[in-house]
Amino acid sequence: MAIIFFILVIVAIVFGPAIWVNRVIDRYSVPANRYPGTGGELARQLLDRHGLQAVVVEATDQGDHYDPEAKAVRLSEDKFGGKSLTAVTVAAHEVGHALQDHEGYGPLRMRTRLVKATRGIEKVGAGVLMVAPFLALATRVPAIGLITFGAGLLTLGTSALVHFITLPTEFNASFARALPMLDEQDILKAVDKPHARKLLTAAALTYVSASLMSLLNIARWLAILRR
Image 1 (tube, helix red, strand yellow):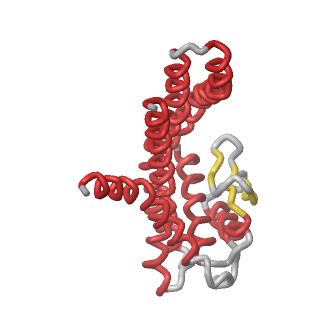
Image 2 (cartoon, one colour; image 1 turned 60 degrees about the vertical axis):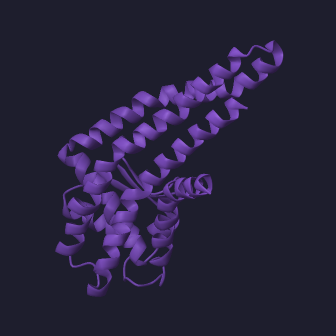
C-alpha cells in the first residue's frame, strides 16, 4: 500500500505541473476572439513602445520563445494570430524576455551561455545513445551499459539543469515585465486580470514541467540498466 501511495505521489509531482499548465493555457484560449488584436500584433506594439524596433516578431512551430541571438520573439501560430487571453498574455511574456535581453538581465545571459555550453554535450550524449546498442550487440561487453547510462546523464541531466536555471528568468519575465506592461497599457479586461496571472504562472512553470520530465527520463534509464 505504501509503495502504491509513493508511486502516486511521484506521478503527481512529475505530471501535475504539465497537466495544470496545459489546462490553464487551453482554458483561456477560448473565446478565440476575445481581444481586438492578435498576440503577434500586441508583441509588436509592446516592443515598439520600448524602443525595440529591431526585434522581430515571427510565427513558429517550435513553441513560444524569445531568441536572444536572432533578436526574435517567436510565437506559435495560435498565439501569433490568435486573439484569446492566452495569446495576448503569452505574447507579453515573451516580450518580457526581449526586455530582459535589452537591459542585460543577468539570469537571461546565464541561461544563454548555459544553453550554448551544453548544446555540444547533449549532441555527444545523443550520439553515444545511438551507437551504444549496436556496440553492445557487437562486443557483448557489459561496460557498454555504463557508457549508455553516462550518455543518458549527459543528454538528460544537462537539459534538466538548463530548465532549472531558467526558472528565475521565467518568473521575472512574467511578473516583473509582462504583467506591468499589460497593466500600463490597459490591455486586459478587468475580469481577465486574475486569469492573466494564472497564465503568466503557467508560462513560467512550463520549464518546471520540462525539468521534471527530464528527471523522469533519467529515472527510466536507471530502471532499464538495473534489469
